[in-house]
Structure formats: structure tokens, C-alpha cells
Length: 553
Image 1 (cartoon, one colour):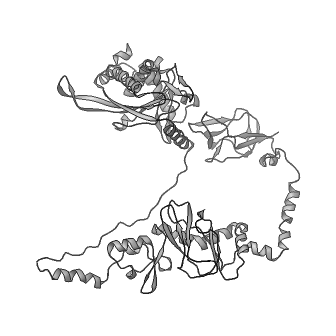
Image 2 (cartoon, helix red, strand yellow):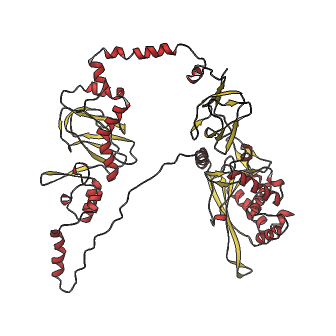
Image 3 (tube, rainbow, N blue to C red):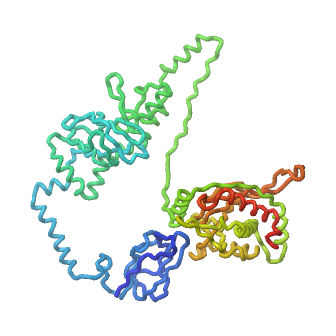
């Protein structure tokens, strides 16, 4: 019997996964223990093996696609087995679908005999225009009709103002791009509706409006696309080009079509907009027309006359302002599971835990000397970050309040110390965990951090290696960052941000000398760690870093 395989939950925080690669194809034989696919979780890319044997009959999620946990991933069964019932969700296959198909084929014939009703619902007449709520700003999601300037039955000419529409930014006039009779108003004055809701219908007088409105949902995809292109795409496209909806102005009794942005720029430059030739649809004047407008000889002579009236001054040549011209472009890239999880977890932490920050400056001269001596030993290599991790582990033993977790009604005091070390990878950030850090030597910390960081960048960490931290260290000093703050990696109560070591003038024994210093910032959850507690932790941390020999004793 065929087995349904769903998207597995490969980590405790995984809500959806992405198939990075299929290692089996439909029709391949699958043995128990074979690797079916590589699945990208919110933390790593992991191999997913089969617990069943048979033939791979169906793949439900293609390479590169993501889906929530428990979504149909694949079906394994006997070669040639009927899995239609499983795909349809019934769990069993049935010989009756052909009869249903015959019934389905026979169904359209009945309305076809109804004559006018069927014909009416098939297609919207070409001379009838369905006008939808326009998107009059880049952030507009819905609009409110402030007032209608035309009523049902009124004759509408192209360019007439139909209504005043209130957006999220302003109340703007909305003009008609079609001529005919206003047959229907879909949104009453004072009512709001989302963008693309039917706003009005314009067409020949006597048109059956009910048939037009009923035709909209029954039209095929091709008709729908054509309708949206002919009826709504033109005004929306112009709205994007001019950065604001187009309105009309009058000059000498004739209508001048210009966008509000074009009118504003023309007013600022002192240009009579009636003298500008529009290049937009229907001759509308848009921003680029105003910017490229060259004044005629007549207005240009006015400043010359004024200059000649003052012989002591010499006329300066008028140099036109050259504005940058280009084309806006952008690209949307699909977010990886890791990126989406980072966004979700950090947003939850930032907006649920009341963060506060404490910063100190640490003298690192002794730490530099100690590190140089340690690294001079054979096969030994430690970094300043390793020293910070060790100092944090030892300071946490002295300040257990910092090594806690907020659980609502209770606070969990962790008697073990496991420090997470933030590691930057191509798609974001992962935090491998050094389990029982306080029991490790400095060289053990260095070796483990190097191993975990390398496997993190190669996406070879297991979920267990990224869970269980009680405190986190984030270091951007190697990038030259002097000081920064981090968002707490919950369920921790604190995270330490480590800056770069810099040489600068410092005062020692009343004299100014060159010293090496490093700034560290502790972000604390005020629900579990009070300010005084965080400050005391930093004092202990500074004592360990400024005198590394105390950590090795």
C-alpha cells in the first residue's frame, strides 16, 4: 500500500521547509534508509531519509519550493499503483471518476440551452467599461469615496471628474478615461473599499448592468486579463510614472491635462504649464515634460531688459539646470527559510522582551600580551573572541541572575552554562552552542568555536548543536565595528555585543599613554535582569579580561 510522506519537522522551531534538492526522481526505487532529498530548514540544510521502501510515485514539492510542515512531500508505493485517491485526499482510489468526468462534460450543455442568460454571462460588451478603485499612492490599500461629482444616468466625457477619493495620504480627484453614461455606482459616498473593487460602470444608455456585473466572475482568464488591461492598466501605469494621479486644469476655456507633480514643479520653476507639450497618454503633461521644457524666446528676453536698465551690472548667462535622468528598477528575491525565521524570532524578542543596554570599555593590553604568549605554544591558537567567551562563562557563575530564562509566571535559573556564539553565514545568522562552556579550557573553547563556525558556514550543523544556549556572544570587532547593540537571542536573558580593539590615548598613573581598549555592550531583558545586576556582571567580566591570568588559575 502506498505511503504518504509529509514535510517533516526537522527542528523545534521549524514551521516550513524548502526542498533544496531531490536525490530520487519519480519512478526510482527507494530502499529504507535512502536519502530522498535535502531539505532547508530555518537553521540548516539537512538530508531527509526514507523510512519506507518501494517506488517513488509522486513528488509534491519541487526543488526550490517551500511548504509548511506536514504538507504532502512525496508518495512511495508499488510500481503502477493507483494513488489518485491519495492525491485527492480521499485516501482510497475509486473507479467512478470517469463517470464524474462525463457528468462534468454534460453540465455546461444545460445553461447553453438557456440562450440569452448564457450568452450574457460569457463576455462583457466591448463598449462597456468597468472602473475599479484605483491605486492612487504607492502605499494605498483601500480608498474612501469622499463625494461623487457624477450621478447614475449622467453623461460622462473623457477627462470629466467622476469622484473625489480619499487615500491614505490625501483626497484626490479621479477623472474618467472613458465616455458614455454612468450606469452604476459600486461604492457610495463615505464608504471605503480595497483597491480594484468595482467603483463604477460606464457604457451606452440602457445597458443591462446586472449582466455586466455577473459576467465579471464568470469570464475566462483571457477575458479577465484583457478587461483589466483595457480598462484599468492605463491609468494605473500613468499613476506610477508620474508619482501621483493625474488631474486637469483649465486655460482659456480649454482643458489642460497634467499630473499634480508636473503642476507643482512648473509652479516652482515659474513655468506656464499651458505652454508645455505633454508626452503622456492623451497628451497629458508629466514630470519629465516639465523638466525638459525649454522656455521660448519671449519670456527669456524679460531678464535681459531688466539688466540693461542697470548699466553697472553685467548680465549673467542663464544656465539651465541639468537634472539626473534614469529609470527606477528593483528586484524581489525570495526569502530563504533561515531569513524568514531570523526575522520572526528577532521581531518576537524585540517586541516582547523589554531591552536595555549597558556599555563599558575594557583595557585589553594584558589580554593582547597573554594571547601572544598562548599562541606561541606549539599547535595552539586562540582568538580574543575565545577569551571573551571564557570570561562570560566564568562571570555567569558569579552572577546566576544573568543566566536565567523568563517563563511568564516563573523564572528558570539555569545551573549549567552554555554560551552561544553568533556566526554570520551567507543567508543570515546562526548561533552554534558550546555546551557546558564553564567546564572547558581556553584552548578547548577555541577549537570548538572554530569547528562549529566552519560547519555552520557549510550548513552541516545539527539542530542539537544550535539549541540550549543560556547566554550569547556576538562579535563584530573583526569588521572594525567599535560599538553596537544586539537583540536578545531568546530564551536567553542577555547577549553581549563585542566591538573592535583599538589603540588610543589613555590616562595611566596621571600620564597620557597609548593603550588598547575594547567596548562591549550587554543587552538585558529587564524582566529577569535588573540594571544593577547587569552592571555587576560587566564589572566581573572586565576584571577577567583585563587580567586573563585570573581565568587560567
